[in-house]
Length: 520
Image (cartoon, rainbow, N blue to C red):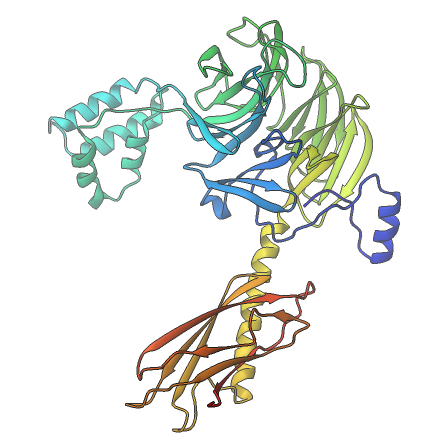
């Protein structure tokens, strides 16, 4: 799923590729990846010069979130996550050799750190003090001074008016049906009330040197309107800053030990600028709409808005320029070519375009088959300047192909019935029932044959199973194999593998023919 421009016809496509600045390296419409730009990172995770793609995958419909690591077009590793990922980043934890970057993945209230694709450390956000009124209500419930209905009524009043949010325990309680509330209170009333913040965004900040291979601190934005800077070795909190809103996008420049600037775009529609030794923002950029992306390019803060505009600002909040987009902005990221000293802004649009800007000058337009959901630019494998794009169409295409596969299987079954390819023997001389099961999405399938002797008392001995198939389309380890003694009434599973040789999706019938072996 690497970048390239596309067009409607083959002739236009050839002409487009000839004049394009990009080469189509790989396209996978069935990648089944659900993510956004903040959860994509390219890094040399093994220190072998081979850059991998780490993906914080939300999973289908926000279920089954996981971390995927891709090498080229294949998934190298995959591990489940306990909560939805918020951001991913690669960073160096120290100066010792080998200088292999670690992978950090923010998920829920935790940052999971991996080294050599193995779990290394888990940082958890410090717990927050609970709402005192909420604490008092649960204490009363513990002493049986109030029932579950009174507790529900009082907690709903706190949720509507209190500045301190309720704990997860109280929120879960309020979501229950009335019939379930009493049991929930009896189970949880003795447990302490815990209030935990979650991570909303994450980035990296150089510790004390600006070199590309210098160690970096993790900078976290949290749901309780705070920014935390973590030590890269001990994972202690080096600095804590407060914001008037919940941060959703972060951009940093400088070094933590020397001087740095930090820009945070928040849900309240403002962008706040902070500097070293500032506990609160120094400057504020007020937007008329919600931000959908934030990128720092050549000391210019480029902000995407829900009004389909790109805005350029200085760090002091002065607006430099505005560019209107032809469609809604869905994602943004930085394109940086260090060899040329180029920093540009990539904007992924709902109409399938990826627009690349240097300040307000349009450098390039890449067209994709569907709305762009994430962008990532950098070194992939051993190739510099690789652009990775994911679109909404990928999952839809995967589902469509799965439905087509099921439809073709149903049609093949009907054809088999109509052509008398019956799995049950029609004569008493061959009392045999055969049932086949195919597993897998290809190109290698597992074929399991279930044989059953349908006679009442006579066993079957010396039976062979032969496969008749198009050798241009399929390959099997063996064209036939011997069947053991078949006792009446028992089911005998026999397994083999089928490899599809066609890269164009062409399929054909594989006939299974039982035959009696000749005696010696």
